[in-house]
Image (cartoon, rainbow, N blue to C red; front, side, top):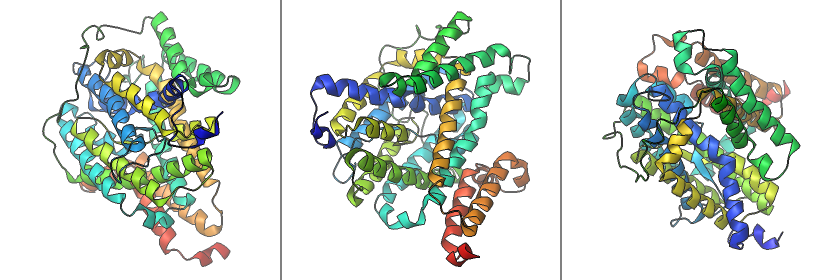
Length: 445
């Protein structure tokens, strides 16, 4: 492979650049659209509902604005954008905050959700100006715990999906947890594992996507796939400003998204460092880190204004760069253009919406488990002395405990209750504060 591919500004021949760009899209495609499906389902206009068209729109916007945000990163606008091969996508990290905001509220909750997305994006944009100054607040003990909590907070969603979906769970009928439901999820998991560990190249990189396709074919054979909505979908769509109506700003949504913006910024710092180390063998510059954080914020703000969810850098693509050694940002730009094109074709979203919830469950069990595993991997760099064990123990116990027993906060006002029962925010807050205030002398006690 040409040494020029280590240069972010090098443009490979199109015959090489196009497949490399599409490979990046395949690596992130499922993870990118999944949050929109989960949020739509939590709100009540998911699979089979009368408002299912709203979910299709959100799927389309997930692709479209992931492409736009990626262009902001790779091409840049002034100080905004790292001008590195960073792939942006819809973030899982915000789900613990988004799900309680919309749960069972239908379309009425969407202006509030989007108001939070825009406010959080603006705050995230501001973070870019001083993210470098607070990096010492965020050692692996804190960042690893945060990522682990993201994964743990989402695993229940994957299990519910695999067993039949939230709707069947709430009905408590015999269909929930049936062998047929679980078989669709297991097909996805088995195919994904087989491809990931027994193949190489594109088959391994796109293992989750191919696993979902095989699971989808299996579900079709069982008669679980309906194409009724595909023919109804338009041929072309343009993003609609304030699609869900005028933005509404509530304390719970605004504060929640602002706090999660800090978590997302932490993730972006790690991803930028991983790209420069894995692809170019050097440390990331302050300009690259601040530019990437600015781009996160701008991409999220614009997405929220059009009815899409927050964007952040995608860690799975960092690993892809380390594996291929291709640092060309123009390769990722090609992938971004492909995402934008898909985002303007509603029939793509309509086809995605035909995937049975159980099939998707098999995929998200893997994805959410990998998020938790990534957190554990980061924690492996921690010096596990008594001080750090105490910080981890208290933060994990309080965060996970509040998430598992939200009734413990029944006397807490609504806004604070939503933030605390996410689990993630109290765990992150405790870890950061305790790490700053507890003396290092405890390490030797």
